[in-house]
Image (cartoon, rainbow, N blue to C red):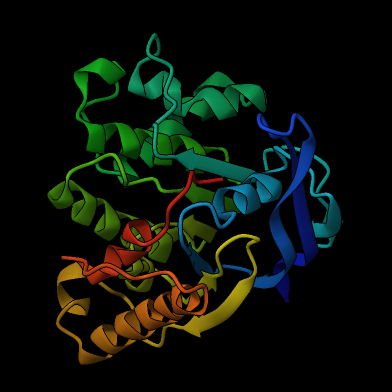
Length: 285
């Protein structure tokens, strides 16, 4: 049974043209339909500005589509709710709260009794490997540790769906790989339904059951690629797999073909797995 159903989403923004002084229609998403199973890990890749973050905002209930429906467990999404956890690349922690109190925030909103709240927080702080840091403040933590706090906070109040928008983009490469392994371990244990936005094809393939490849704007689904790599996974093991290399290259070619069709010259990239960033001019929507 599907956990999330998206049916023909269309999102439009109205932008004032400074030259003509007229309001013009900007189509961010068009005919976007997707079904996600319970407990599935789905990654979304595509060039900057193709509507990845717009799509995630719609799932989160932060914005309403111009047309089309989104349902979670058969219920129409009309706004934000605690059945969805949202993790962004900017951590979004409260600087005046300790690790413990940051993780507890969603439970406080749900009016969970204090003793139960503390027990749940300790469980998830341990899950993300931060035991012993409960009384630290965000400015006393590294970037990777702050992102772990954000993950623990989102998991603690038991959302049905975890939405992640470039959550590891702000950390260094070594920390990013560590966090990828941590996320894989947490997903294996919790089996949350996860939608993960990334510009890195390599990261998308490593983490996901399926990778959704989007076209340049207006954002549509070009192809959904099944990732038939064995689980449990670790970054070190997966990257030695020939199947992993083939899948990564296949997705890169899918993205490259979009720009060939648009007569855009594709530059040579040092890291082909991040070529979407290098060949996609414009601001991310």
